[in-house]
Length: 327
Image (cartoon, rainbow, N blue to C red; front, side, top):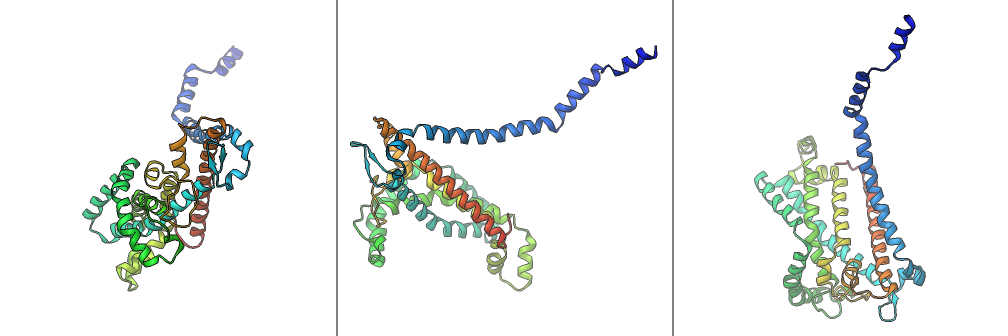
């Protein structure tokens, strides 16, 4: 009798199994598995993207090798292709955009977070968020009908008259070119810098401001010497978020850069970017090598973006170690 009771005691009760299942479903295990799958999907998507770009650019890589990166040739008729003019155009327009957008965006973010009345700040911030959501083709239209005529009749002649001794401001001014594309990109990315930097500055503890002002600093001195250094890692993040947008922008740049695969010292000269040439010529690519070269340009753009974002991470880490506080 005792053995039967002992055996019955070792038989798991169905209610116990159900309770264990319920505990598993209600516990952290499911959340851990689901979130792990979602996180792994990001790695999977990125790996698939690189894999597809890699295998579909085999013909171009076999034909040109590493010379593809440094060659200036782009001749679909004789199937001579090189990526250097497009890398040059992408980097130059992105640098111009950041040079213009960074001081403008940072100054606007400081005003909205530290100096403006809350009602004004919230209203302008709402408009900035709307600007960030405007499709890029609309910015391209703005560039064609506003920036290009201004560049041809006002901005270009003014730069030539004052800084014409510099090689970057010499040569014919057609209205379209590197500088025009950079200005349009700056208009596009400045909302990102303003929006993110403002949110970062608002997270700085109030005590940081009050401590600086208690030591006799003015409001501007407290903002510039106490608030901005505290939030500089977050501000750097907003800058490189804008850089990523500028590097990969397609339609707006295509409409105003001139689409000429040449390397020129003058910012007035027409040029080309990686995203623009892929958008313009992908549907026209007939030969296997031609199509493969365009796909390899996509791989180059991916690697360029990867390198820039990696440098951004390193710069942010260096900033934090140098005394900046993460926002």
